[in-house]
Length: 533
Image (cartoon, rainbow, N blue to C red; front, side, top):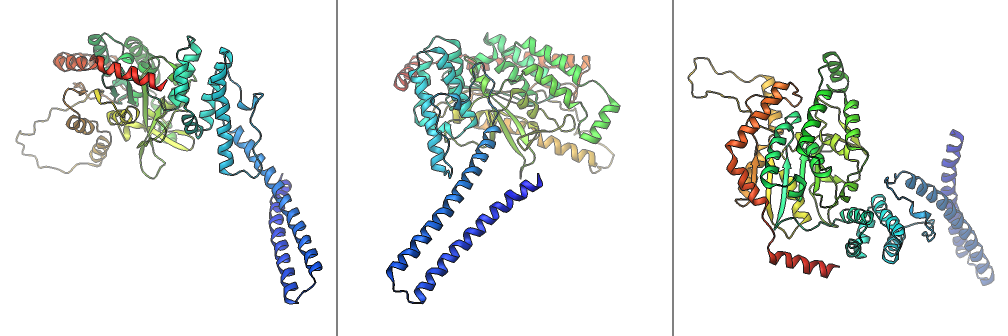
């Protein structure tokens, strides 16, 4: 192996050195002729012809060498892209009318021409095909091609592909409709909102305190008469909020099913293991068994990718937040089951290509509890350490997806807050002491995971009757791995007490959610669809 590597390395080196000496020799030869005052035209032409042939043979050899190297690199890059799993899947090059192989000395314009050619062939198949099987194959091919070649998205948009795909929705075939929805989501198309404006749901992190969130969501479903996924256009979540956003928004489970999953999973995952937990914390910086946690997530969410979940009819857009810790500064990362419109600008690094369980695993990688999660060289930790209230992310995403729509309703749900009863006005003879190191660190963590700062900002910025923050008060302090039955039951009681005390706020939020589109808005949307299609 070392011999082969050395031969390849020195082969490249000697070709370059040989070329340099060749052109140097040509230059010296011409100089000698001019210096010696060569007057014979015939001899001079003979010298020029010799130089041309020699240089031409060298360039051809260098071209062939570069061609072989370029083809090897192309093969490696093609093998590194894993195709999406699908019912109907075939590589683009397996088609009879496959695109010609890439030229040897390829430049960026030639590569773009190749991608443009492939995009045109795919769209032509969709346009001209009368067979459902061929149409399914072409739509799946489009989805896979956009995933492996992101630069093709802008080309598809220039080809009026969104208009073509919207026409496909009239085909009464479930597979065609599902693949069309996925392709539209990848192209950055946002469906019309469900109400007169955009309806947003934001869910905080909090571990097993997610049971408090479920009670709040249960009451919202009760007074609106609709499941969560039907009431909102976009759901954002972080940590335990990411789990709930996935279960309720993507997989459309009921509140009771979610509560059952929470209790069963937390009992298995957060089982006390002092010796094993301490050793893991020392060696892996994680108290709980991360491999077991990943196994639970994979069984729960299977191997579906985020963008594949966009196939669901009338499903909300879902975004989950993690924190990147190996970047120059700590920053949020957005896992989306959709793509933003072409040429739009977002504040956040993002992707829609990962599997659902990977997105949840990254968003809920709480430091000290679970190991950090690595995806494509980026290290993810729990999104709560940088953004524990993702309501601002929901508004940012909505402004990009629906730039011409106002925010109709934004409901932000917290996992409960505990405020100790401190008698600050009570006189005391004890001298005031400075805080300990533990207190300093605790306050620092509280500052990093603060959720009320975003709440106060949105309350000031959004119009009245638009923003609702629902965060029950808890009677006891609970950690994110609390599993004692009496504590979990007390959380539920605290949530129900909060709901009773704030019934007016819940009813106001429900009225905002249930607003219907006016006839004028429906007419405008209908006219816009006719123009687009």
